[in-house]
Amino acid sequence: MLVVTTEGLPGYEITAVLGEVLGVVATSRNPFAAGLRSTEGGPGQDMSQFLVQTRSRAVGQMVAAAETRGANAIVGMRFDHRDVTNTWVELCAYGTAVVAIPLHARTGAHAA
Image 1 (cartoon, rainbow, N blue to C red):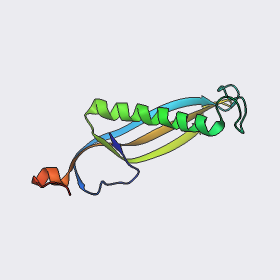
Image 2 (spheres, helix red, strand yellow):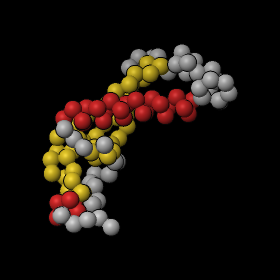
Image 3 (cartoon, helix red, strand yellow):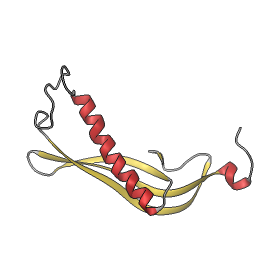
């Protein structure tokens, strides 16, 4: 699955727009409740790894939603977040699910 933050796909023709897709992850504001031992690294998982993994989970859910709709790409991907409670935050990955074909596949030409 091709996921891009741009609104288009150079070298591809978007043949169908299947609609918005999203992935949502709720995470604790308390890094220690999330399993971190230190916010500065050290033994166990560090904060940057935790943040990357949280974003990856949201993107994974978004990709699964796009695949369910029959998409092979997502354009305009973004992240958003909001407070759910004083201790929980929602992280949302969202974009537009599309069907895109390489231009060389449409014309029968081969890519260099």
